[in-house]
Length: 243
Image 1 (cartoon, one colour):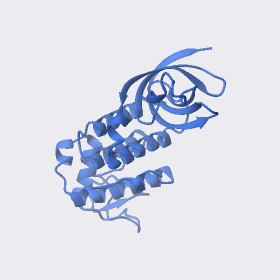
Image 2 (image 1 turned 90 degrees about the horizontal axis):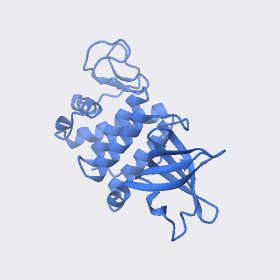
Image 3 (image 1 turned 60 degrees about the vertical axis):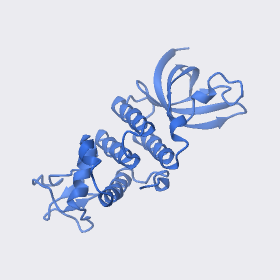
Image 4 (image 1 turned 90 degrees about the vertical axis):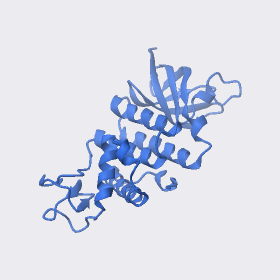
């Protein structure tokens, strides 16, 4: 039996038997994995409440043949306590968790950069650092960047002609010039592309001064771009309440 410790965000849970749960975890050092938490559905469980979706925990586990087993769980921060009372924040948190699982296709493959993105997004959301919709869109754009799908928002994604350009193509990788644009290209407002660039690079001062119509247009483009590269949309994203 091999014991190890790691920090993790709880992505989701499912029932196992009469009293156990399978916990899907996104860990700092071991990537995404599934582990059994024995007896957590009993009222006298030592750590059942600490292993709920959005919880940030420090865990001790031992390696099993198919699934690892949680033996200790200490709470670092329970974001669910702060998020579950607000519909918009809770649905956004679930979209973040779902996308984190989709972006980590291989279990036990370390993904530190993405783990830090998830922790940072949940923390900003729980403490209301910025507008919730902006936090979600910034997280999605940066997740796409970490995965190697960053949309071009200035130069043409095909010929690299300096921009900004009028057209945006999902299949073309973002901004495209007139000569490279496919027939299905969108024509977002320049302010929308600037907002997406601000969210991608972390220029929050500029992002928070953006107008509502540009935020809505950016959210639509980001959702469509995400769906194109993940090959199907997030189930939780249509449930998100936009301002």
